[in-house]
Length: 448
Image (cartoon, rainbow, N blue to C red; front, side, top):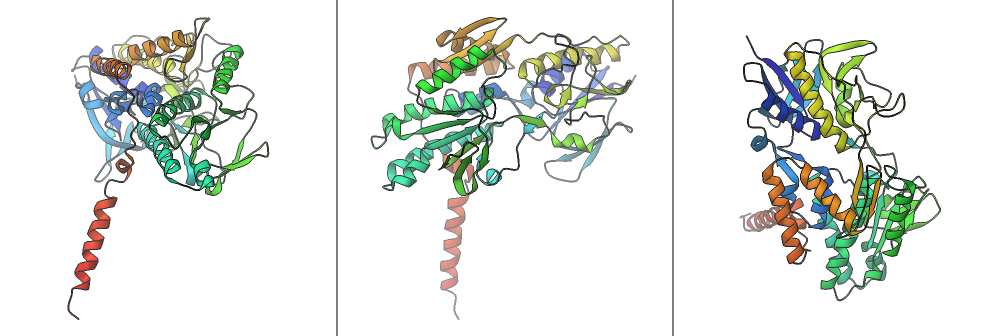
């Protein structure tokens, strides 16, 4: 018989783990697995703060798709439209004309994007913190601002360069803020012109608490630790404008800042609007606990979804609750979904996804952390160690686990690297300038 074709849209936590499990659990004559993603790698997002802080190499926080998914077909491109009535996806490769891919089953897992607001100046001045590119850009930018502050003799320029604003008090915002401050404080050892008190680190959070995934006392502990490090914590405060770097807050304060990092939540990928699959009021694909897409009371044959872009009922929570958009749920949903697809292909009944959220761990910088796992609360060094241990165990492949452990070991023995490589973001600038100058000189020598 002809093998079933399974198309996996997106190679994030859900896509990668689902494709990997499907390719291992199904025989080649049962199914072929095709993975479509514009990036050649999966980013293990919990390691973005550590990569930005220089604790691990950026390359070791990503998983190469072609190395990990050797039994799958990888298509480098993006899905621009899904016509499930025809069981067809329109794929736009990196270069070249669009192509159609037919399928029998589709796993829709494009993930999420930053949820931004129409705040004046945010699009021009803000930096996200969701991709490895954004994390490394932020690292280079922060170190570059230290160079600017050390070189200038203008107090206002120095004050602006050393003011760092982070908007959003969830895990991404807290870890990014804490790790970057820790890195910058380490870097100041090499800047005799600057003192730690010259830096200003500001957290802007619209609600009255940070880290909503843990109990209030753990959130309060986190705030207390950040305050001990002389950070400026603004709760129940919103960013209202940042035009030309002038930050205006809802509490009436205003100041200039060269660095504005936006980590205030995520929303489902916009690509979902280009599908004929059912979605809820938040733009998420509606699913059953089996991870099958459902339209009202009707199961959409051959359509599956999970992760940030899916509304999956949480069977361990109160009625009407949905699974949170976390890596913990995404990885487990991917495994359950892969097993359910295999079950359907083999004529068996799919099983409901059910997992009680185990808790959360967060790093607050080197040797500092907070954790709440199965009701057990840890702070400081034990929490930091649990954070590293948990995420090292979860990143895919032995190759990546070994590389991360080696990075951590070297960082323990040697000093942290604190050099900015800003030229990475525009590597052709110097060559273009040289070529333009050479062209001008050649033009000057032309006879009239």
